[in-house]
Image 1 (spheres, rainbow, N blue to C red):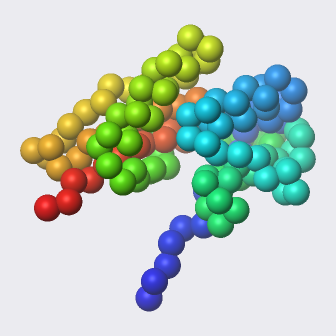
Image 2 (image 1 turned 120 degrees about the horizontal axis):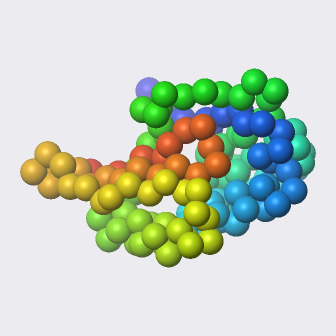
Length: 137
Protein backbone atom coordinates (compact mmCIF):
# COMPACT_ATOMS: atom_id res chain seq x y z
CA UNK A 1 0.00 0.00 0.00
CA UNK A 2 1.46 3.35 -1.07
CA UNK A 3 0.72 6.19 1.37
CA UNK A 4 2.14 9.37 2.87
CA UNK A 5 1.35 11.77 5.69
CA UNK A 6 -0.81 14.71 4.68
CA UNK A 7 -0.53 17.07 7.64
CA UNK A 8 0.41 17.74 11.23
CA UNK A 9 -1.82 19.78 13.55
CA UNK A 10 -0.67 21.80 16.57
CA UNK A 11 -2.30 24.32 18.88
CA UNK A 12 -0.94 27.66 20.10
CA UNK A 13 -2.40 30.62 21.98
CA UNK A 14 -4.65 32.87 19.85
CA UNK A 15 -2.18 35.77 19.97
CA UNK A 16 0.48 33.61 18.28
CA UNK A 17 -1.51 33.47 15.03
CA UNK A 18 -2.71 37.05 14.68
CA UNK A 19 -1.14 40.45 14.11
CA UNK A 20 2.63 40.80 14.00
CA UNK A 21 3.20 37.32 15.49
CA UNK A 22 1.29 35.80 12.56
CA UNK A 23 3.26 37.93 10.08
CA UNK A 24 6.56 36.89 11.67
CA UNK A 25 5.61 33.21 11.60
CA UNK A 26 4.64 33.40 7.91
CA UNK A 27 7.79 35.33 7.01
CA UNK A 28 10.07 32.96 8.91
CA UNK A 29 8.76 29.69 7.44
CA UNK A 30 8.33 31.33 4.03
CA UNK A 31 11.95 32.49 3.88
CA UNK A 32 13.34 29.33 5.42
CA UNK A 33 11.37 26.67 3.54
CA UNK A 34 9.11 28.37 1.02
CA UNK A 35 6.02 27.40 3.03
CA UNK A 36 3.04 29.59 2.22
CA UNK A 37 -0.33 30.26 3.75
CA UNK A 38 -3.44 28.70 2.28
CA UNK A 39 -5.74 31.73 2.70
CA UNK A 40 -8.90 29.77 1.85
CA UNK A 41 -8.46 27.66 4.99
CA UNK A 42 -6.81 30.17 7.34
CA UNK A 43 -8.59 32.58 9.71
CA UNK A 44 -6.59 35.20 11.64
CA UNK A 45 -6.57 34.43 15.35
CA UNK A 46 -8.25 31.04 14.79
CA UNK A 47 -6.21 28.88 12.44
CA UNK A 48 -3.31 29.06 10.04
CA UNK A 49 -2.69 26.54 7.28
CA UNK A 50 0.89 26.45 5.97
CA UNK A 51 1.44 24.62 2.69
CA UNK A 52 4.56 22.57 3.12
CA UNK A 53 5.21 22.61 0.16
CA UNK A 54 1.77 21.94 -1.40
CA UNK A 55 -1.89 21.84 -0.42
CA UNK A 56 -1.55 18.06 0.06
CA UNK A 57 1.20 18.47 2.68
CA UNK A 58 0.60 21.11 5.29
CA UNK A 59 0.86 22.24 8.87
CA UNK A 60 -2.32 23.28 10.67
CA UNK A 61 -1.84 25.72 13.52
CA UNK A 62 -4.99 26.30 15.59
CA UNK A 63 -5.71 28.67 18.44
CA UNK A 64 -6.53 27.16 21.83
CA UNK A 65 -6.91 28.61 25.30
CA UNK A 66 -4.88 25.62 26.54
CA UNK A 67 -2.35 25.06 23.73
CA UNK A 68 -0.28 21.99 23.06
CA UNK A 69 2.48 21.30 25.60
CA UNK A 70 5.57 19.29 24.71
CA UNK A 71 8.53 18.03 26.68
CA UNK A 72 11.13 18.88 24.06
CA UNK A 73 11.54 15.57 22.25
CA UNK A 74 8.35 15.77 20.19
CA UNK A 75 9.16 16.89 16.69
CA UNK A 76 8.18 16.93 13.05
CA UNK A 77 10.78 15.31 10.83
CA UNK A 78 11.55 17.01 7.53
CA UNK A 79 13.49 14.80 5.11
CA UNK A 80 15.68 16.53 2.51
CA UNK A 81 16.97 14.89 -0.66
CA UNK A 82 20.64 15.87 -0.34
CA UNK A 83 23.26 16.90 2.18
CA UNK A 84 23.91 20.21 0.32
CA UNK A 85 20.17 20.99 0.49
CA UNK A 86 20.16 20.32 4.25
CA UNK A 87 23.24 22.51 4.74
CA UNK A 88 21.55 25.28 2.73
CA UNK A 89 18.46 25.19 4.98
CA UNK A 90 20.72 25.32 8.06
CA UNK A 91 22.56 28.28 6.52
CA UNK A 92 19.30 30.13 5.83
CA UNK A 93 18.19 29.50 9.42
CA UNK A 94 21.49 30.88 10.72
CA UNK A 95 21.05 33.98 8.55
CA UNK A 96 17.52 34.50 9.95
CA UNK A 97 18.70 34.36 13.58
CA UNK A 98 19.19 38.10 13.96
CA UNK A 99 15.65 38.84 12.71
CA UNK A 100 14.08 36.07 14.80
CA UNK A 101 15.94 36.03 18.16
CA UNK A 102 13.57 33.52 19.78
CA UNK A 103 14.46 30.86 17.20
CA UNK A 104 16.32 27.88 18.66
CA UNK A 105 18.77 26.45 16.13
CA UNK A 106 20.75 23.30 16.80
CA UNK A 107 24.14 22.45 15.40
CA UNK A 108 24.45 20.49 12.19
CA UNK A 109 25.37 16.94 13.21
CA UNK A 110 26.57 13.87 11.34
CA UNK A 111 25.54 10.57 12.93
CA UNK A 112 25.95 6.84 12.37
CA UNK A 113 29.20 6.98 10.38
CA UNK A 114 27.87 9.86 8.25
CA UNK A 115 24.70 7.95 7.32
CA UNK A 116 22.52 10.71 8.80
CA UNK A 117 23.00 14.47 8.66
CA UNK A 118 20.61 16.37 10.92
CA UNK A 119 19.77 19.50 12.87
CA UNK A 120 16.84 20.70 14.97
CA UNK A 121 15.04 24.04 14.88
CA UNK A 122 12.21 25.56 16.86
CA UNK A 123 10.36 28.79 16.22
CA UNK A 124 6.87 29.80 17.39
CA UNK A 125 5.51 26.24 17.39
CA UNK A 126 5.15 23.68 20.17
CA UNK A 127 6.92 21.11 17.98
CA UNK A 128 10.57 21.20 17.03
CA UNK A 129 11.40 20.60 13.38
CA UNK A 130 14.10 18.00 12.84
CA UNK A 131 15.72 18.25 9.43
CA UNK A 132 17.44 15.15 8.08
CA UNK A 133 19.26 13.80 5.08
CA UNK A 134 19.76 10.04 5.06
CA UNK A 135 22.64 8.94 2.84
CA UNK A 136 21.88 6.26 0.30
CA UNK A 137 24.08 3.19 0.35
